[in-house]
Amino acid sequence: MTDVEEIESLPGVGSATAEKLIDSGYTDLMSIAVESPRNLNHEAGVGESTATKIIRHAKQEIEMDGFENGTDVKERRKKIGRLTTNCDALDDLLGGGVETGSITEIFGEFGSGKTQIAHQLLVNAVLPRDDGGLGGEAMLIDTENSFRPKRITEIAEHLEKDADEVLEKIQVGTAFNSHHQMLLAEKALETGKEKDINLLVVDSLTAHFRAEYVGRGSLAERQQALNKHLHKLLNFAIRNNSAIVVTNQVTANPDQFFGDPTKPIGGHILGHTATFRVYLRKSKGNKVIARLVDSPSMPNGEAVFKIEEHGITEE
Image (tube, rainbow, N blue to C red; front, top):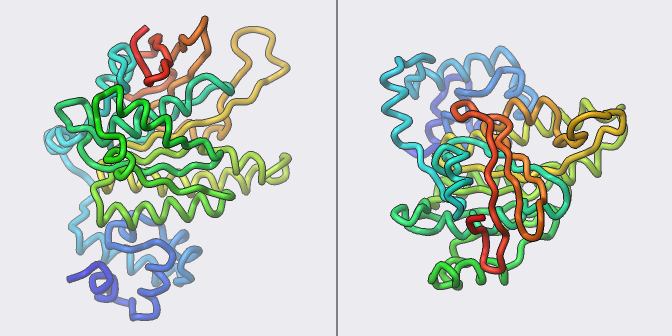
């Protein structure tokens, strides 16, 4: 039975309702089962009572009981992969590399190396697992026109890989505004069903949201849209066991007299959704200091790496 047939088989769902659900991004039973009745009502125009019924039956179909014991979680997490950054110190800081099934946020000032790491990870993701890669394909949502095939070629050739083959395995979507950015995330979900997408990068996550939602009056609307976008990305990570890496801009608090006044855009919404948060600071020459500021499993700490012509390297 196809995903469409499964959705149409749910009680209270006819062909017209199924079409609404699919058009709204609910393309399989899992995406429906984990949704709230309110959101299903808002997104697909389904009444809340009907939405509650649809969600309940979707959970039953996929045998989503809600709880599993710790041993089951341990076994499931054995499938979690780690993507090398090409720097052992940075990998160690993250607990062995960038984790699949999670969102890793990399934030810092302009020129701190965010996009350089993004390019390195796009190349590394298509490498075999024995080389620290994920052995599949990668996707990039580019919001600042920062993707450069030449940079991919430089990194790939240094790793003695065929640059053209690497580029073939990297799909790039250029987002022209925040709405288009969110649509590309939904497109990525569809692509993930057909291809082995192990890494999805958004560079940068907040640029369009920051430019389009200006002033305190639009803050709530911005955070609501950003929250929806982040949960689409997290959904992609969990369903495909893929690594999600988002770069983020920072802002400065002029009223702060002590400590570092910079903080990432996105507030608590991003802070609670990102699994790992890494703060980059420029150091002397081509050195960058990476500080892990949030992680569910690793202590806060720092690592130093270099940005060379051929990519990320050890200090």
